[in-house]
Image (tube, rainbow, N blue to C red; front, side, top):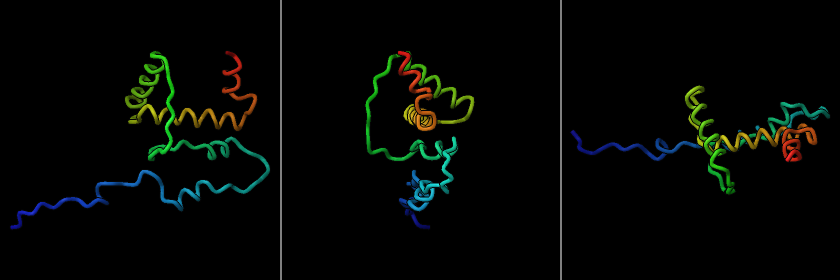
Length: 118
């Protein structure tokens, strides 16, 4: 009987966090142009990056109440929906939603309304 320990290979330990290059190209390929942009098209164009290695960093300062609200949302997503996501993922999703709404609605978007209110 051999005393050597069998260790997993690197491929077993590390998994890709982004789809293969050809899948990304297919996702980014424009749909047939009908001249009309639908809400579904706007959502498809602005997708959050999800769980990939991010090369860019941005620091945002929030109040303690905003941070608590964000953490509360994270915990509710985990408890009620079974989604174990971090605060950064929630923020990236929120940014994608706001930007898609801005692209689709322009001056009537929630972003413009909230920024002009106050």
